[in-house]
Image (cartoon, rainbow, N blue to C red; front, side, top):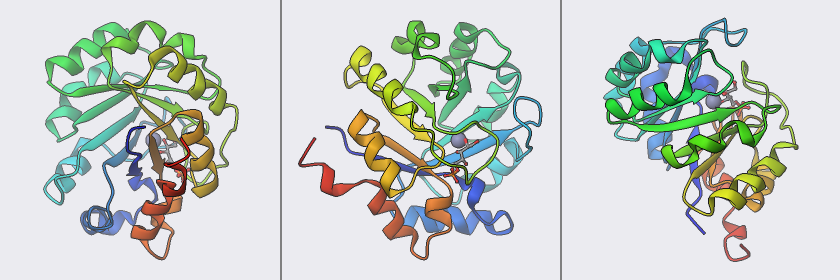
Length: 220
Ligand code: DX5
Ligand code: ZN
């Protein structure tokens, strides 16, 4: 069993204090910083772009995983890479040619991830699995934080593990709290992405360590 990674989503952080928020989750034991980029087209919300990423890059050495919820990810790979992303995650449902976008990410020497919306079958990512480092399984419809976990993702996570074995990082994103993290880990996910659960907690450190569900490790 791989170590369970926790990637707090800064969508739920204090936007006016972003550099310190990133420092706080670093000190609290986060493994990665999850950065939700939304363009108002692919999803009905607009968040931030490469300039924000550049401006928080020097606040931490943690890897930045940039979740691109944008209609044309292929047009922005280089910008998000240059801004300081380490992992670039693109949606299969967006308007681009996946094989080409993955080549662009590799050409920037970054790690690649593919995201699947709750109603998109695992088969949509099947042929790219060997070319990527992570699969991001959406457990809410993307666009907003604070939504309820959609349980049907669990079956899909199991399916990916059956196909892939233990190579891929499988992230679960949306509505992740201690209870749903436990379900996702049992299904085979090994990265917990959480906005509300971390940033609305009294103690970021405690929220992060609970999301790893340490009590499960001996049982898996
Ligand atoms: C949803 C984003 C998620 C979201 C998670 O569109 O991709 O990363 O911020 O937020 P919570 O943990 O609040 O559901
Ligand atoms: Zn996300």
